[in-house]
Amino acid sequence: MVARTSARGAARWRTPAAPKLPASPDLTAGGDLTIGDEVTFERLDLGDLDLSGRTADGIEFARCRFTRTDVSGSRLEAARFADCVFESANLANLRTQRSSMLRVRVSTARMTGLQWVNGALRDVTISDSRLDLSSWRFTTFSSVAFEGCNLTRADFQNADLRGARFTDCDLTGAQFSQASMDGARFARCDLTGIGGVTSMTGAILAHQDLIALSYTLAAALGVHIDNPDEERTR
Image 1 (cartoon, rainbow, N blue to C red):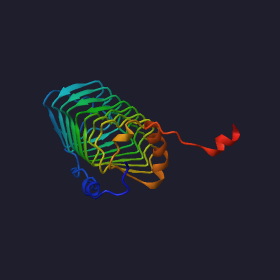
Image 2: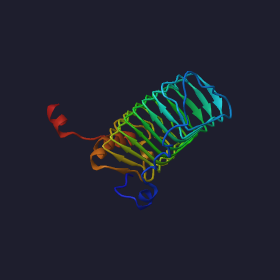
Image 3: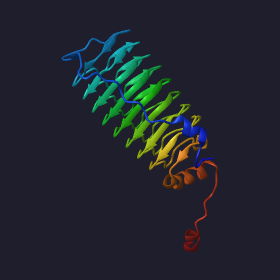
Image 4: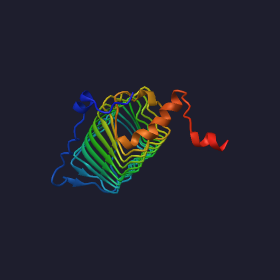
């Protein structure tokens, strides 16, 4: 069920490309920013802005930097983020449909409850961020790295994770039912109690991660693990 190596999976994975940011932004946005449908923002420094609770369809951000920016609770349809950086930003409970990230780096962000549904991520690195209870259903991951993230009870149902890598992440209780995972990589992750473990065909795991996963797989298959020590104490 779990492959130790996978030639096809290895070919899919590559290190995410870095965002192509300008040497300096054209403008440092201050105060408020008018968010609307089919609006494009380019080469902006969006530090410390409150963009929470907004609604937009077809909005695009290109070569922008979000530093301590609050986008929590917003609803975005068909949004596009290209060559952007998020640092200490608040994306908690952000809801998106059919949205994409291309060459994006996210670090030390709050993303609890984020919903990125039926979207696409390509050349994206998310590090040291809180993504518990986030949802990535039906989203495609291509050259995406999660590093040191809290992904407890995250939902990856029906996601295409063949181009994703998880390193030093807490995935306790995460859901992977019906996900495509041939070539997905896990290293030093907590996989305790994950759902959809039988969908992990072709995934590549570090040796130390396999022990916790074996108990979850046994439970999913209805296999009882006999413990001789318990028998002697009865």
